[in-house]
Image (tube, one colour):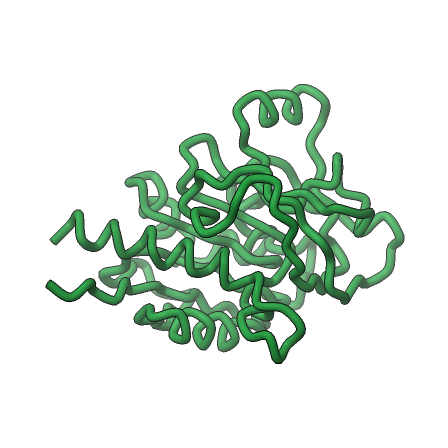
Length: 231
């Protein structure tokens, strides 16, 4: 039996600018990637959902604060509550936090400046659906490009997340002032993840690094297993 191509939906919000990059990256990693418009009230038959980076609704109010009310987000929340795999990249991470699907908030960078460069990341967990191709403690190089990527949680929440091992990625050097250099987290069930770096911009060595493919291909494999289990 030939392994099926998992069907991964990439949400499109007004102002998003990395949706096509995400679509291309997943297609290059042997997934059937399809666009899902933000006005959809129901998701098509999908094995995973990706909220891409960009500047949804021009980043008015707070990043992701308007997009979280998009009709499609109710369907994404339902998909996640049913155990579906959801990945938020940069603005997608911000939207998931605003929607309450991920813990913490994203604030203005500590420097109050836009950051756009390759950054080193430390893999804290390799047992999530998004990091199975990684090894714990591995150093990845993936670019960031954000002005509001400073992840914050108060003492009680941060300690709770650490005890539950919900921190998946940390910056290996100061980048934006994130608490304890947190770069990516999962929800308590482990099926929803958000990260500020852009793995879709690091899937080809010609771009300087292919380390992002480790994260995206992990999701593709996990989504494929989900498709097989449902068959």
